[in-house]
Amino acid sequence: MLDVQHWLVTLPPVAVYLMVAGVIGVESMGVPLPGEITLVSAALLAAAGAVQPEWVAAAAALGAIVGDSLGYTIGRRGGRPLLARLGRRFPRHLGPDQLARAELTFARHGVWAVFFGRFVALLRVLAGPLAGALHVPYRRFLIANAAGGLVWAFATTYLLFHLGRVAEHWLKDFSWVGLAVAVLAGLGSTWWLRRRARRAHPVPEPEGAAPAGSR
Image 1 (cartoon, rainbow, N blue to C red):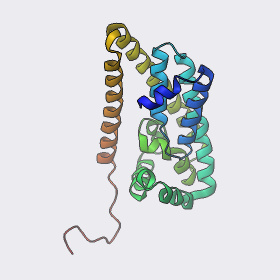
Image 2 (image 1 turned 180 degrees about the vertical axis):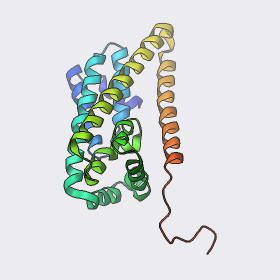
Image 3 (image 1 turned 60 degrees about the horizontal axis):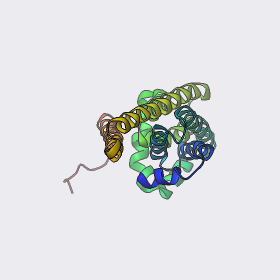
Image 4 (image 1 turned 90 degrees about the vertical axis):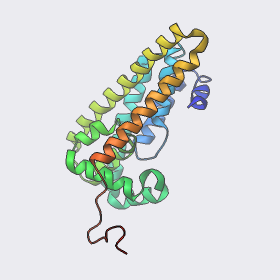
């Protein structure tokens, strides 16, 4: 996290905006990259005055919407074999268990999974390709995708921007405390959402599987 922020601060503002859009866009296409960390780092840079928060949020939203749409197209053309290949390449992030949970979420919630998936690490990566592979109507997908991308990008950016400004104002000599609080809050919320998602949408047992302990 700190390494990403220290690296971004060496770039001119336009390069930061392009980096935010690019990383989030590629992540949204189905490649597990640190999109959320990049956005958090850029938002904290905005709080320090290095970049403008509105451009950070706009870049993040653009990357999310375009990346998800490209992921949708790739998933629609590649189908489940593509998802299986991604799972073999990134087993830790896109393995069979993760894919099963994401599919179950889509089956239960439809395009709402695209909207709320923007706030959950697993679905943020899989939403576009999975929606395409499941042949979700593109118009409905685009509406949910755009709404989720805009809300996620602007809410995350401005929340961290204001937290950073408050921390800088009250803790000028201990600005690292504000950064640590923001990072812990982000990690804690991600963990909580992921735990809720797993509890609400457990991975179904394959039919005919023997119960644990019966062998």
